[in-house]
Length: 196
Image (cartoon, rainbow, N blue to C red; front, top):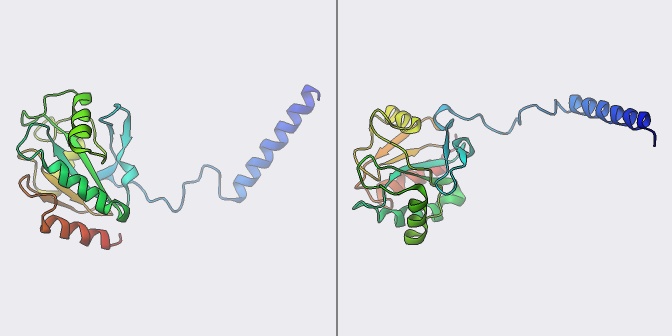
């Protein structure tokens, strides 16, 4: 086949692709089924395990439980309850997001050390993000917004924020409240049953 014939065939294929895209609403058109990412979730954070940036927009439409964590805290055993919540409700639309923080001087390790501790000690499988600040002037932008929306900022490790499916409402729960407390579980079940 000559070079000019190859170019002509390529031009025809490209033209047919443009025509087909035009008839179907455009190849680059946004997916009409995919919801827009609300401002609260429109953030990217490095994954705890590999530092690769992860968009929180992947959790649009889910009930999201955000928790600031620490490896050397009296509440560290709450990892067990958080993992059980995640296991029990993830198929219904709950995701638990862990944000390790040394704001209260109980998470001094590197991201690799934190990831190993969470996996080997508590079998954590819910998404965890790289260590960051969650309180005060240096707080990461998600925690700034969560504090603004709930009127409550973390006073200690394992503070919990529960975000509804539309990411329009945030409920705050204190550190001492167990992940499997009737109050938190009841609120999760209510939010899972609601549709945005």
